[in-house]
Length: 290
Image 1: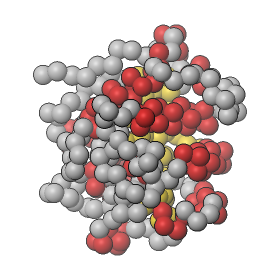
Image 2: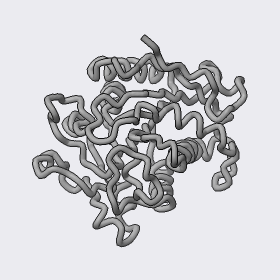
Image 3: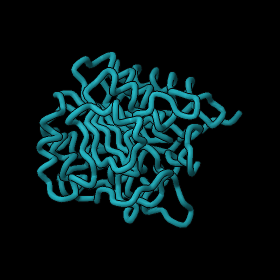
Image 4: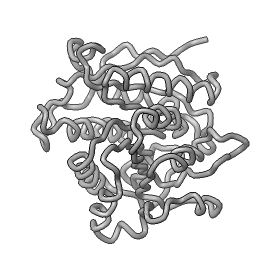
């Protein structure tokens, strides 16, 4: 049995900024796509993400910062395609809990969206007044799908039963999911594309403590085509950053994941978008602490 072990540092940062004891941030790669129901291949997402990161400039112009100096530790993965989904979720839960207890800022790269279940479980045990900010083309609110409650299409159902769930960019869902939507907490893409007034309302609805889960398919396929279930009419880069910057400015974001990156050998721009998004969010987190 082969396991995926990432030996390089994130973005090629110096080793002194990549050790666990010196890092404020942990990056948990989860190369898993067993529950993918259309295009498979997001298990290759973490490797493509880390490879693309080697080509990113470490100075962020907007925030005038080099956030890697806060330290980013890449956690070796012990998950592969033969791991059961239930076991994968348990592993992610345990890793999240372990690093939360060490007061680390938790970040993950997937992998399909089922990886979020374990992380949110662990975070929910530590933070009672927690909001989940879910940015996605799909609601992912099915209680069970294809015989499993752990499918990527179910990734937000458990969270919706325990926490405030704010959903952004939604433009595809099954009618059976409507009953699980939290009233007033969903921002459909066909409504929010008209202006930016939705941003203030969405931030207001979040509790003080927030975990962010971003599915790459929340973006329009014109800027992020390499994902498992692309949907037309998504968010664009600067709109997304404008909103997320407001979230980080006004709330205590305790972690985030980026999921459903499905690498394409002929198109690597989505890999790099995911890396830039990751680094931007870290820069927003520590913008006043550099």
